[in-house]
Image (cartoon, rainbow, N blue to C red; front, top):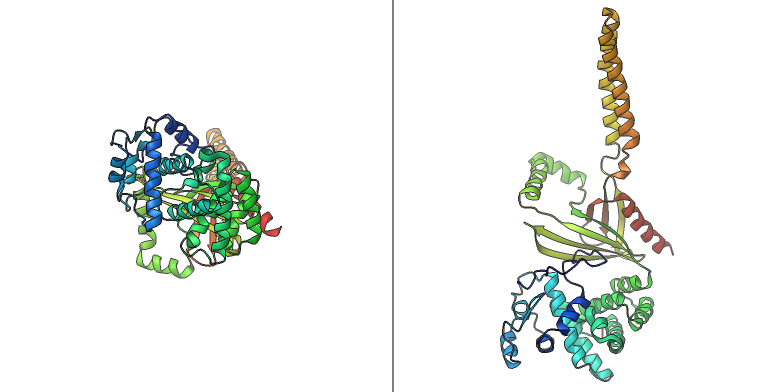
Length: 411
């Protein structure tokens, strides 16, 4: 089975995230616990990950076969229901890493730490610094599996993770840097550990970095409002519209998108998660049914210029109803008058029927099909960077998410 292919028994996670094709971490760990060479595979990933951290290498394939040979592992031994571990380690750095591959390698790294947990503050600090660097520069993220793999033994690691975020916030962790601090902050905010939650709440009030503060503030809120849709082109300005119309691209671009959508199955599904302090957009690009790119964009409240919820053509149904009423009334009354002049009951009935049908269509389009039941678009305008627009959102969910943001910003 390819390393990034989801096994048949995998199920969607409860959160319904865009990375749901990967199996849940506890399921991967349970499978590895019963694997004949599960511990050796965990030691292999552990050794490679820490070698990458020590040497500041971003590519995993270097030395994977040699390390496996020293542990007596063959390609067949590395086979798991979630993919082949050696194949996953030997993927090219330029090749996209699937969610299943990340879950497998992350679970193995966490299990490798659990087999030889660090003893003492100094050892925990070294492990956390290595994990932060590896998570920021490679597909391995052991902290996402730390609670399941280590249990209460992960508390010391969470305390050191919080200490690392503090040092990075003060500029005292140059080797890990801001990327490592963001990774640690996200891990602290996502952990269910009591120690991690306590550290996250304390750090949320102390951190100076707005993104770190937003990630940690999410841990203090009971949950984030979620709306699923699709990334769409942001609204264009008047000058851009004029230029595109003059060059003819205004008609070519939608046609190209339509061809890509139906011929190449081009999709950009996205999920918007709104907490009182930030908006997180998880998006991926699909082509011919395969994921070719995944993105995660975090917009702190302080960094947003405008958040707008728009309904395109909100009065389209009303105008269509008025048009149907005008046409039906004109033709119906004409037939009714002609029928009255000619004394024809058939023309009189047909004219009256057309008028009644046009009135019914107008009523249905105006009252029974309100625009709010359709789909809407949310536009995020940050102070720096490009505007991001999510379309095909459920208006009720979009309104709920934006209300949550407004409540958080006013509190």
